[in-house]
Length: 288
Image 1 (tube, one colour):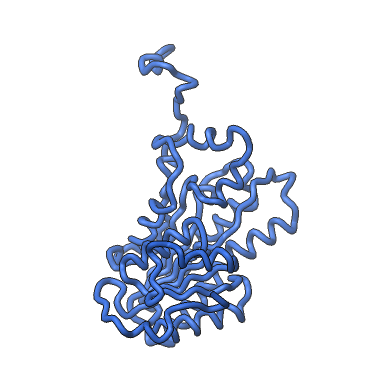
Image 2 (cartoon, rainbow, N blue to C red):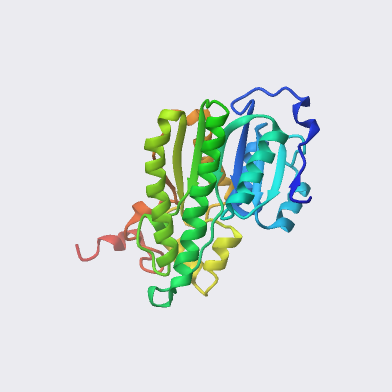
């Protein structure tokens, strides 16, 4: 695929109508997990999409997906913490796809499961560099491009986490970085809404992605999370992409500055009486 791939001369051949007509949507972390599902969601709705990721091999595999459309998509191998590379990727996407900046989904991120006492200075810095600075840097370039193109309605969706909304064991660095993303979202929304750009965030609970599987690989970890969710399962990336897609689309035109938890009821559940604790409904009332 090279550093930039697809969607060259063919881009203007087809007239497209709908909510994403004449716009370009950017997705960071687009090669896997939630980002990949978001890219599919957009392309299936005729959006022109720039897919950004640092994993060149995974980007190349996108061409094998049934939803891939070389006339509507461009892939760029880029590290979101590399400002010059981001600049080049945004310029190339807008040149090749030919629309104005209409949407940005900041799905790139990393996660580690470490106790506070095992969290090193380096790990904390790296977590903030990727999850917070990466979100900021991509957003800044999107907004600059949006303003250079004389504006128009646009939306940014950041990816937070329930670990940024509540204290979860092992999420010292990750949870702190996602809490920062949530606050960044609120400030961006306040300052960018007058420019025509809505900003919101989605805070997923456990999602069945390679990244989440990597931090819940210890025995019993997945079961422990599921036991705290009324829905009783992990989300699929596609379910989270549906929520993100709503927020990046004009359908959510009056939603701004929100951090929307898509968590299977995790945050609202409190103490859940699991099957291991109670075998019959009537046992809930014992001792009352």
